Image (cartoon, rainbow, N blue to C red; front, side):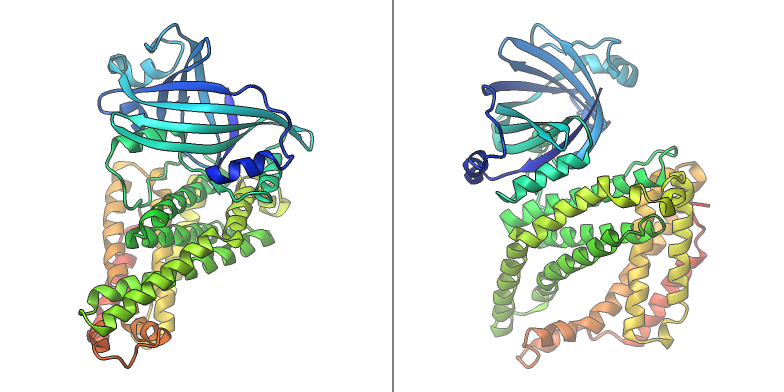
Length: 483
């Protein structure tokens, strides 16, 4: 069977406010659930996109296998359920594990437990039936424990759009955030050391996928990277988490640009502008993170550290604010239910095979970089910055679509192409630092303080431009892995 659900995070302090708001009818009796998650010794099931659990609730004990759960805010995934008599998994031909993993799957072992108290309600929204579940509990792996407090809205019958209609009603009462971790992912993360940064995860697209589904997968991956780093940033004020949160936003905006032929609605343009605003808010703190390591102990460094703390305060205030909450809700709603999915003008682009769409999009991105990078020495800093942005978009596009081009020749070409792109981005990055460093210092009013000269690159600009031009020419000479 397939399920469509929306996962929302809510703080424990806002639960009573929500329950007393009149949005939910009288609940059924709360149910205590205890789940044991299993995997092979090397966690092969989870690595391949499968989870295996046995859940006990009252007198019921059910084994559930889920496949292709990506942790996205709204998703459909396959499930196989089997009644069991104890906490020993049944591995047979009634589910896909034997065919996928062979005999090794019979060596599964307990990995962690999830204990929650679940309260459920049935809500009818615009004729759609929605099950609302409030889960409160914890995940335990050996001696590690992490709490759970989340709402799940599951569509039982009707339209996915109505999940977002009801989510907006909840958001009008209490702040919410989109959850991007399943309970299984929480458990497997708990088994590892605490992560202080989350880089972009590989994206898997099937060749039979349509362009519109490829866009949803790519955008969901970018949103997931942003939310995971946002969570780390809140607790640790970590510079790398902030940087990767900005990377996620840039990747998301690049995806919108790449898929522009099918994103002609006004909402796409508005949301991209809002993402640019948010990246800019985080960018103020990032600029200071880059400068501070170059400053020697003393007055200048102390001032920059103070300004950094203020910039982080501003960034976190924005993340907690209504504008960002609205952006996340609006974007998820549009991504999965937006007009672009049904407009006649974009139907052809939406229904192109992903492989064909990707090849055309990569060609366009490469052509744009070639045009803007044809004469780096003959243009100003602003135009060189445009070439830098083009290079990032081409690099992100290569990562987005890599899984569509996987034969041996394409793999070799991809490796060489990305190596050339990395060199180009490094060279253009140095040029950008040379151009923007003084502007950042001036914007913070520290241009005249002793020691400021050490923070500005003294590299020879003409040499940097020559190096960047050579790197760009190497990218143009590299064979296209998608052709």
